[in-house]
Image 1 (tube, rainbow, N blue to C red):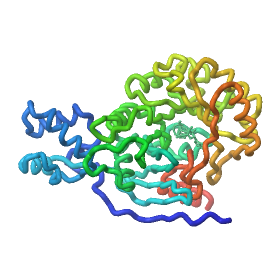
Image 2 (image 1 turned 120 degrees about the horizontal axis):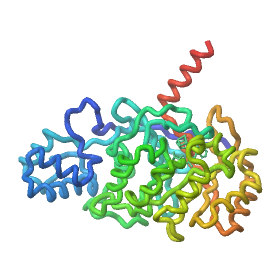
Image 3 (image 1 turned 90 degrees about the vertical axis):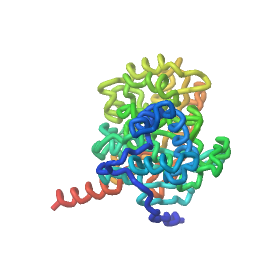
Image 4 (image 1 turned 60 degrees about the horizontal axis):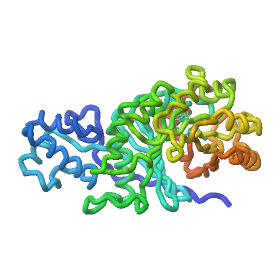
Length: 391
Ligand code: SAH
Ligand code: SF4
């Protein structure tokens, strides 16, 4: 049966980040930075922390974007805030809903760039897959984002702003500002698995995730946030010490020869260097395992021998292995391994004592699955260029 046509709809515009905007955006500032800008704007020094706390709660606990609604601040303070500051999040350009309930948002950020966000509803939770960069500097050969040049890093405001616009769309700002328990939330988990390499934008990702975890705001536990990296070895330990979230590694191959072609950052930090960093990873434990992501590519990395080598390599690391059936995209140079092959691979991994779930592709009808993200304008640009080249 042909899949139902995805629903595409335009969404009403909300205030957006604009490079030319002279007003300072309060979204994305750390608590200390928020206090500092308020004091600079004329709030009395000894009130700075308290006022920052109040504004923080309005923004991140209640989802308020209008200073006039901040009723525990005096009229004068509200007027001053409106004159100097703005509460701005990315603008949703389009929203698509897959037949399986997955939602994909295309959002526009300063400079007219676009990034994609994917929301995946599951039985007891809902995961938001957010982006950390426009495009990616890395060129993993199986990844659609990798065919798009890096345009720029996202700011902390644009990163946490993705969570905020998803909560807007899901209608998930608690009325009284009291957060729902995680199991009752539509958006209960965040994965940094969208576009970009998060460890090449470390500070902004860190500041944004600190905001997501702050108990007086969005208040997601650090264990509900997973950062996925292709293996930027020198930055790995900081993920534990400065963010504290869970870690996933795009492993994908069991020899340097194959990993060099799939995940070219391997030429800089090879499998051994990566595994050494993971062996020393400060937070790894049986309750906080490192996820090894492994994309299943027919005839490339999916043999029984690969499965056996994989479990040998990761010995001693508290790990789980996440097998990802390759998600195809137009022009991709690989094919997805067969279900039987994936099952056989998974059994070898499982009998070696590792959990090895196969990730169910979600939102395929709207190109929302892992590694399929690429902004429509960039896609458009490329295809126009391809057309020109072919003339
Ligand atoms: N840049 C980061 C995070 C983004 S990608 C990283 O590489 O880890 C999230 C996961 O999807 C990564 O494991 C990535 O390797 C994988 N992926 C990329 N393209 C894919 C595709 N076409 N099919 C399946 N998985 C893919
Ligand atoms: Fe970049 Fe990750 Fe895609 Fe590699 S897999 S190109 S690191 S987004």
